[in-house]
Image (cartoon, rainbow, N blue to C red; front, side, top):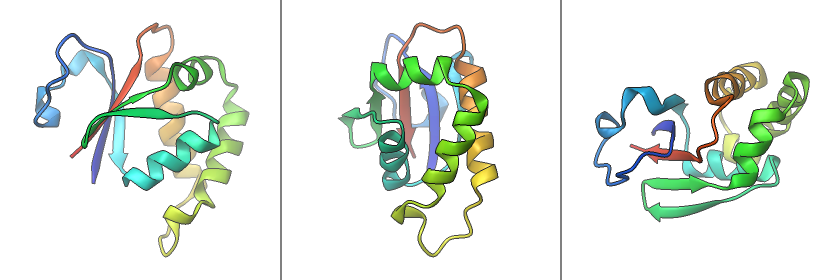
Length: 119
C-alpha cells in the first residue's frame, strides 16, 4: 500500500493523500502496516492509530530521527530488512536506508510530530 509520511497539520481528517498539504509531506513509499510497525520497533518506538489509515508516531521516533547519525540509520535499515514482514520479498537494506535518510533530512529542524497515512 502507498504510505505517506508527513508532519502534523491542523485538520487530520484525511480521505486520501491528496488531502495532505504538499509542504508537510516528508516522503513515502510502498509499505505494509507490518513493515512500519517493525520499523518503529527497530527505533524502540511506537505509534497511536488515529484511524485505520492514519497513525501518529511517537515523540521518541521524531526526536530520534532528527538527531540520529546516518551510519546508525544504515544499521537500523539492515535490521529492518531482516524483519518478518519482508519475508518472500526482494527488499534491499540500501533502499530502506535511503527511505529513512530521505525522511530524516526532510524532517530535520522540525518540531512537529510525524504522521503516517496508509492508502
